[in-house]
Image (cartoon, rainbow over all chains, first blue to last red; front, top):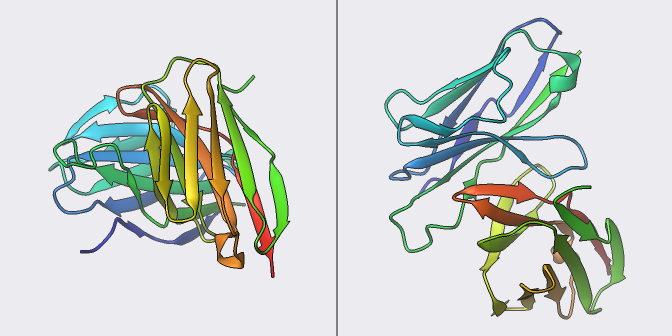
Length: 116
Length: 108
């Protein structure tokens, strides 16, 4: 079974440019998370989806960040315009509230964003 | 002050040593997670605890709810155990609050 897929793996952009990240969760997982991880720190939740509904987006900087999960499967996270401080690894994770291991989040490899 | 504090931040050990990583938290939780992150970003779940102790292979995790403290132990450490170990607490529903991680290096 394929794990959580993210693309691209690496992205370098200039400040003020837009950028988008894509995530395909594990098949059948209804919950999808986007995290941001700064160097030397733990991940911070940006947004959590239950199916297509964003149920926790309180930590998403809505002035420049947006996300969507239109059909309740894959998801896109966008930043427009990017700032230098957005340089980080953006992680996607998924889980299933119906599975025996409902508590376990499965992480993708992340997208490393560098804003110059 | 962070809600989740880990110690030490960095740990270097010789192969075969017994290793302990500590996690303290300041909020009410429904569960605590230990995760492992290898270079390149991949994160895998090791344990979820709500009480007591769990063991998987050479890894042991304990939690003391009253003291708001958890420990992750690695017995007979090996260079392949080198990674960042992250403690995370589940404070409300599915939201995890992560510690900053402990960088473990095990030398042969």
